[in-house]
Image 1 (cartoon, rainbow, N blue to C red):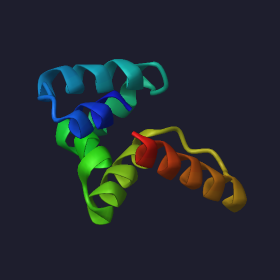
Image 2 (image 1 turned 180 degrees about the horizontal axis):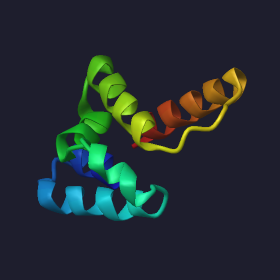
Image 3 (image 1 turned 180 degrees about the vertical axis):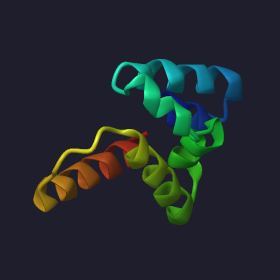
Image 4 (image 1 turned 45 degrees about the vertical axis):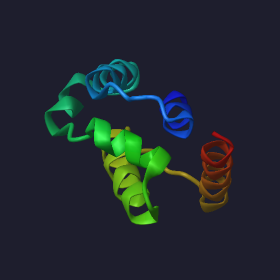
Length: 91
């Protein structure tokens, strides 16, 4: 959300700070062995706020690969998508 606000307000984005923030947040939910396949870049995170739908989907695929696998109900997934879309649009 902070990155989306920075983009919307036209403030410069420090990509190194974004990368550190991403790593710190993901360390809370990922197993250390998952970082071997970590390929999420600051540009990926920025594209969530500014990119076209193809960039957003590409980044979401990377995020899904990193997160622990658990079964999810299709309806629950739709609700998550709708909520994420509303949050990004509101930013």
